Length: 609
Image (cartoon, rainbow, N blue to C red):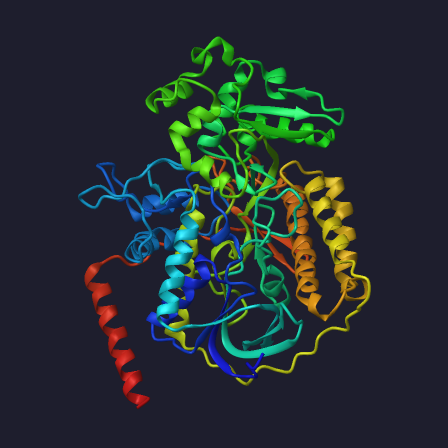
């Protein structure tokens, strides 16, 4: 590819909201010898996913309701399994990062005096959420990309990183294959910022975009640890075009239909719950993720949907007709649902007519992908949507491997529960913290990247699709929101066997398929850590994770989990979370500290001239 062994100060892997922000911030902090490496500029979750009203969660910036950094940090910390330094940093940086996006042109709504409107999201005690519409993360990515391109920051495209190279002092380079030709290569660098998103390729029932693959195994094999890999979000989503069916998609009260192999249709929610089903469908709008605390409430929708699918039936949402129970009028709805629809001017018509009134963009979104929900049903499943675990990082978003950082969903900073939209804030806060630390420390690598040799590979009739399908089917059967301990134990053994012998088992059709081979390898290595964390959580905490909040050991009096599951290789252990920091806030002290840093920086610059 003509890159040779050029040395970079920092390599950022990934072109989503976290990756672009890391590069933009590094450049602004004076770290200019950098490049972004990606297997596809237009791939990934940030650019290709969203929801009914994709949320950005931040400090409140409107109205008379009081808020503070510490109150926001307390909300993040109270989600359970969250380290104090992560909660405080993400809270403190939220306004700075949000306003940077505003300045870059992301169209968050404000009133004529500059107040940025807020609303309540899931697990949110205040109205801190905001949105630029269903494609908020896409707008963020495009705005940040423009900033990067304007600065002339190098983007190395069509490149799948397959190894982070290390020496005795930490990171010293990366190894890669060209995604089109399979040609291998290496790049020397001092720092790597992993912004590869979550482990999107391990589930069959998934709402991650097809273009998202992830790269968590890169950190695992470099020696980093993982945190809370048992903690995931799952929810109702369409499976043809992968999209979260939250918000008004549920609040307009679509029909849930099950169709068996003989074509027989049933409205299974009404059959099981009667008219109560209407209120639960409505609540799915903003109680979208599966949550065992709502197992007798809105999460019954997930459980009953999954039950139908496990019977071999197909499940659909139908917006063309009202569900059973509605023939008795809107008055049968719970007060909350009735008032919401009344204030929205939507106490009329069919679900699609109500959706047209309340959120016509939700219809247009599917139309842009060739799906007319005015006439067509949406096939659905309970899908993996977000991993609340990830690569374990410190307060600077650095792993235990010197020079290796992770940001965005790749980093394990979220915990058990998180307010909806905090992931978008985390892409910006985490990547900024990493950039600041890189710029501040100016780490020196001891030598050039060592020569890397590909493992011995097999070519012939490709079995990569079969290997991938086997893993995904097993994970969705035994290790999604409805988990089986015995099933996971058996699957862990089978996945481990494949990991240990992967390059003896896997067969690529040609050299051009090497990028896919390493994607499948990444999925297996990552899935093994996920299963390890799930099994450890089940045996030592008393739950499988995935919003199964533990009310027994390792909790405070309010039932909030105060431990994290940390995985090294395929071995997991339970450790306490770190407390909320109590840093210096006396102005005069901080001013003097700032003056001292400025003086030291000036001295360093003069000394280097």
